[in-house]
Figure 1 (cartoon, rainbow, N blue to C red):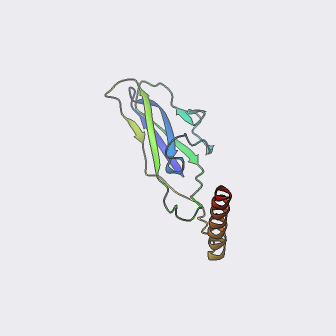
Figure 2: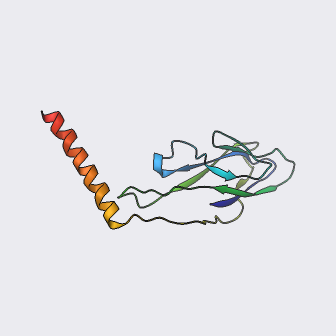
Figure 3: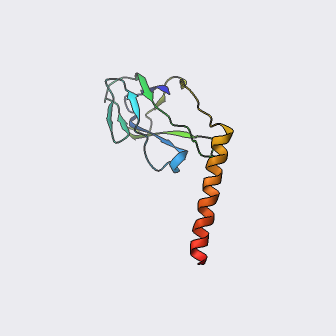
Length: 130
């Protein structure tokens, strides 16, 4: 996913991407490229402190789509924080661009995964009953 961030001089200095795969609990960290002015530490993107409104483009994040049956959607959230003023502005500057390949498991693979899950649940229940 390609994206550009923008902030006013008093807007949020830090951003995090989070996903629904873990209930938005942890920051996503798999960036493959970032604007040279952005600092990355533990998934937190820190933008420079400037006296004007600036755009930081050229950022690429690798997304891993859900592969488990019954998890058809992926929701992303961009959190902005550490604003220098409650009137500051910041966020995405351009539309998100998604590139790459979507891999859909073959029906036989999906059936095998479902069979393994059901068998595992049955064995776990059987152990508890014994």
